[in-house]
Length: 178
Image (cartoon, rainbow, N blue to C red):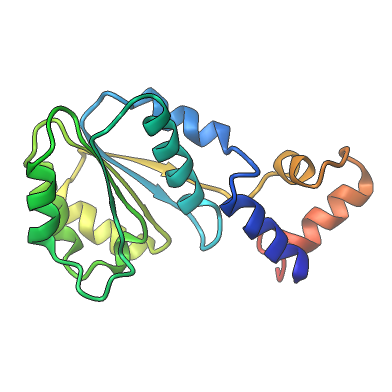
């Protein structure tokens, strides 16, 4: 259990770049629309969004908005007003979009901006399917995020791919209770 905490902490502190997912996001960098990262809880979706947001900032992007879904009073109109003030091709990041009570409405309103890029993450596929069917139909890209791979785990622990690494991986990561 303690090692699971270590894995989660390492991911949050950007100890591992989830390059396969970052490459997918970079390939869609200039294309307007919605990209949604889906996957099981604690698979790294939040970290990937953070890493990609950091990449955009380092690349000189200034039109970046992070929507904090942990706020009790998340106001759709305040978010829209903030985006209206941006020029160019804004990038909007919404983690845990299933926690936004008016997610469908927010996404519909955001999609009315012609050059907007929306990056969202969710662990709840049912809610996302409902939002997507209602809001976007076929105008979004889904990136399915998996828990750490064996090679990522070995990199995190600075180990070679040995039998011990494999056993540690099976016990301490990727749905360890199953």
